[in-house]
Length: 153
Image (cartoon, rainbow, N blue to C red):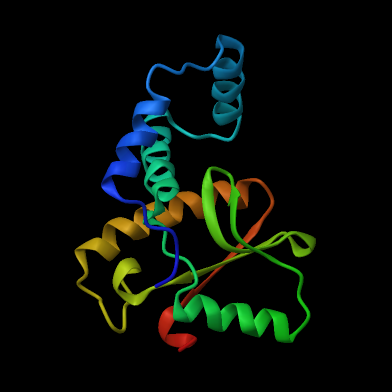
């Protein structure tokens, strides 16, 4: 696994630096209106914010073997894409703006692959979130395709 991992002391320092900082009311109102227009419920928004914090502290998994395989496949065909793109309050694996296409590479364990992990409790709860993210993207005119890890490696 590659990526940025912060020590506990660095995490505490970042947390201390951000304490007490408040956004102006007009910024909070604009964000709230945008999220409401996108159809994001406040309870869902709280989960998304928590996920963003964890991701910003280095808990994001990117450049996994399946993602590297997909990246190589897209590059070999000359497709212009963005990797780990934030769109609709979610970080997507691959975004192809010219086609309004989103490609998610789902790990068998984490997303409950019906072949390799059909009884995964983690996968079942994750699938619910995946469907929510997919529907938000589809409601905004994007096509979402999910590819299983075992199909790439």
